[in-house]
Image 1 (cartoon, rainbow, N blue to C red):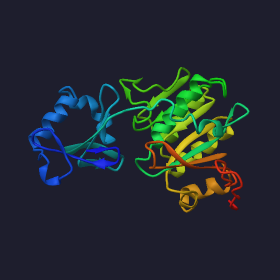
Image 2: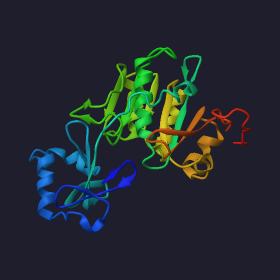
Image 3: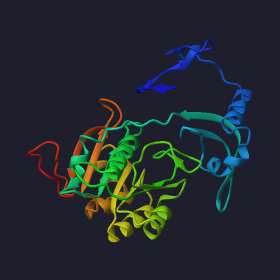
Image 4: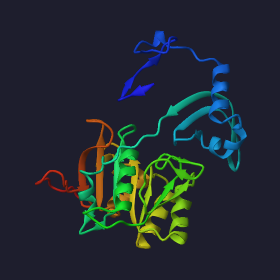
Length: 282
């Protein structure tokens, strides 16, 4: 198990150990019983989620699964011989966006923002709190309607359609919906002022983002990366940076816990959290 970026093993007596040799060895029977328990003995009821490699249980906790994938030309049909389980406990850190939020607003208007982060640096945790604060409103800006496309049930941690995390009073969520399709659906049906998505990266998603921006929606999104230069080298994202789609870039690091902000840049690449930093020619 991973806790606070440290790896632990569960020993046979239930205690935690840092030695791999002490770890309890899980049998196929243990895996089967675990899956039956988390699915309330109705695994078939989670067929659509299993296609995406996870099961969401009450409380919004997500159980990642892996095994033999059954696919056809239309995509993944199902999964069988499940032999690997990854339990991810849903949690939220209310207020973790307090320091960064003032940089994402201009006279009360939400700026197009991209959160850049390596895995396990808290980009989804930060995105979740940004959504909550924009939706509820504060002394920095009035509350706005937010549409969330939660493709992997990580932002809202929905259970049977109800978010288990606090996303604010003016937020609508499309759970387990592909991002490109979901952004279009929200614009046509829910009239969001802000659209939030996690982990963009495909051409279809960038086309949907451009469409949403042209419709007047403000975008808050995340992407895997370690720096501005890293993003500029990705073929799908290069055009987005060059054409200055986003007005703020927030780069996270692993120092100081989840959601810790390393640098903040504007659309030109000028660093905002450190006065006097020159812009690169983006």
